[in-house]
Length: 279
Image (cartoon, rainbow, N blue to C red; front, side):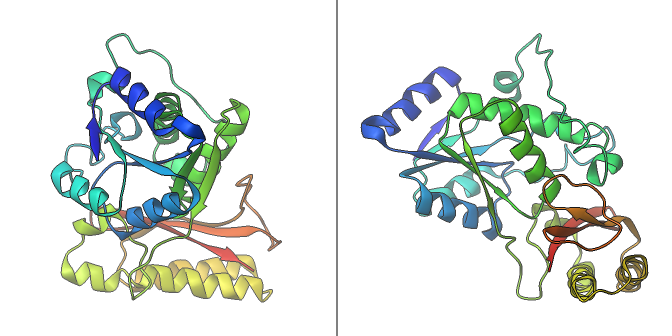
């Protein structure tokens, strides 16, 4: 596996991978890889001839009081995992390559980034959209794969790709979960053993609520019960829990086809997100 850190070398290497009409799938990551990331890589190998992974902890998507400095970083470990999965190329630029001196442009996906995680983390999705657009232009993939765990992010990237005419297929990979149902996340490493055991109350409450909503139960009562169950399970607060249209992210007052239950909750200093399809 090639590890590349400058754009000119990256362009030459990707062009070589594409010779003979071969296709390339991009799996963007911030490192701290786990089985959820590996599931994206495996999907990439199924749908494309070559997989390119990127590792870049993007400072522009972290707020001033968030965990950018503490975010786990272990490139050697991550690279070893990618080698085992047959990744052809790792794109690992530093901040100066991604945002050279004088960088002054950012992308905002209006409305889709305003609510849910966007309300709790102002500017977060502008940073995500900007870095993903740069990755698309740098790697020039045929396919890009993102996990469905961050459903709002996936919806925003799909809209950005349509709006800016990126000729890239955006694929969502199903949420990878631990045996007890907790969605895999790099931030799970922040949880103490006791917190990790209690965190299962989050997906359980959402799964129960999704089933109740699909059964026609009152939305407000169902979401209130889910929030209470999450708090009773050991979480300190719930940032939001909402029923939304899966594509537009419009908040819904009643269940309809293609709805998604979205939620974020905090336990200590750790903020977890999750979502479930409804119906």
